[in-house]
Image 1: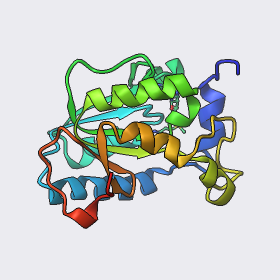
Image 2: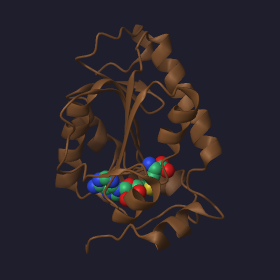
Image 3: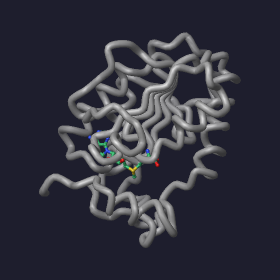
Image 4: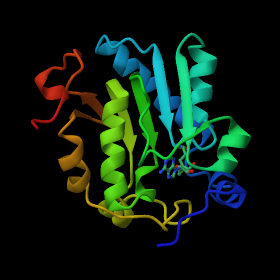
Length: 195
Ligand SMILES: C[S@@+](CC[C@H](N)C(=O)[O-])C[C@H]1O[C@@H](n2cnc3c(N)ncnc32)[C@H](O)[C@@H]1O
């Protein structure tokens, strides 16, 4: 597959009339994720947004929790220049220090299997407590996603493909939340899956 271009036309296509993620929806999600961290007594003092796109998560934290340290990254030169991110490929980069909360929202589907596997390792290196991860799976592509609003030029893998790799480093808590095994956060038995 030729290397995909995340240029101005990509963001225009997927973030204008029928946005794949709107600022309003991301605000609802960010509020919920932040509240779940608070429920688990996870102090969110730093947030890393990987593949930040238009930077909605970073902006939400800047507006609502300005004291939280924020780093937003993206592989796209265009997005980094226009929206103010550091340019990194999560397939080859991990930060030198951990972040309490790491967000990777709609990104891993753009990486091939080897790169996605490396990205999961890098996400694990980056996460002190909680990872929020959303990535459409084969099943989502058949049954869940809006085929007009969603970019279908992606790598489709099964949910188990992701679970098998993520579960080396994280406990799945549901709703996209993955708690680092090295975190001291304590979850009730039925707040998490068995693995
Ligand atoms: C569907 S957009 C999601 C943007 C944002 N996270 C959101 O939820 O609105 C996918 C983003 O992932 C970025 N991306 C793709 N491959 C990447 C990689 N290997 N490392 C970092 N970012 C990547 C793209 O440049 C693009 O901005």
